Length: 174
Image (cartoon, rainbow, N blue to C red; front, side, top):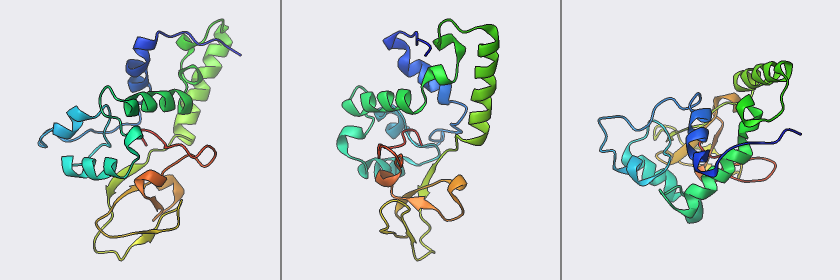
C-alpha cells in the first residue's frame, strides 16, 4: 500500500545495513581474505577453502561473485526476502507518525521472533551423518552443511537445499 523510495545504486549498501543485525563475523582477519574479495558475500566464520566448498554446492548462476549474475540474483532475493519498506519508514512514503512507530515495533518484533539465521560449518567427521531436511539425502561427516537452531537441534541442510519452503529459492545470506 505504501510506495517504496530508493535509488538502484543504493540497493547493496542499504541491504547490507538492513541485514547487518544478523551477521556476526566475516572471514577472520588471520585468514588470507582471498575468498572474501572474490564474492559479494560469504558465510561468516568460514576459512577460505570452506567458502569455496560452500559455493561449489550452489548453481553457478547463484554464486555471488562480485559484479556477476549471482550478485544481482542475491540483491533481488534480499529485496524480495527482506523488503526494506517492511523494516524502515524511510523507504515508505506517506506514513503517519503512528504508522511509523508501528512499523518500527513490527520490525523489532519480527527480528526478535522470526528472523533467525542459518550458520554454515563442516558436519563433524565424528558423527556418522544426518539427513538433509529438504532433500532427505545423507550429509556425511566432513561435508559442508547449513544449520538453523530455530529448526531444532540436529536439523541441517545441504547448502543448495536451504531454500524457502514456498518458492524454493535459496535463502540468501542465510
